Length: 151
Image 1 (cartoon, rainbow, N blue to C red):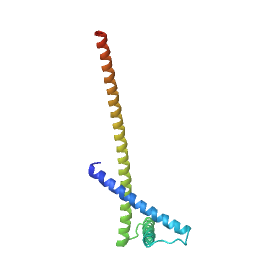
Image 2: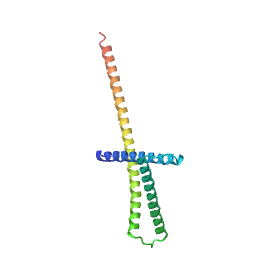
Image 3: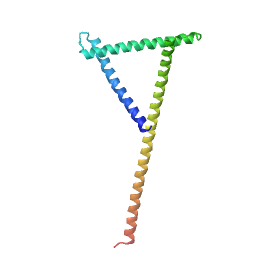
Image 4: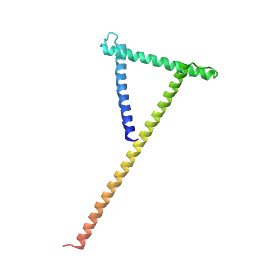
């Protein structure tokens, strides 16, 4: 990847990591609340938990509705969608495509990184062997000079 792509990948990974940490903290709060219903949340925690649960519920409903539409269309290809349904299905399919591309790019980046690491390792070994050979050759030359000129 070029420098811009690496920066974008890094920013994406960093944002994803922060989002995951926030989600993990929220899920932990929800689990703690389930384990101990008498536990009290501060206002920020309550808002975060509520937003998380609401977003999860809406996402699940949207996904379920989209999958149902796709199944209905598969069962009856002559079925027509209204504009909102077409948009939903298009967004769902587009997200699946983007996710697939992201996985493909991540895999490619990982492979390139591994190839570069192996190549750098090979170059490093060759350099070490070359230095060793030069050192050995110098030592042989010094010995030959000493034998030829013992004074």
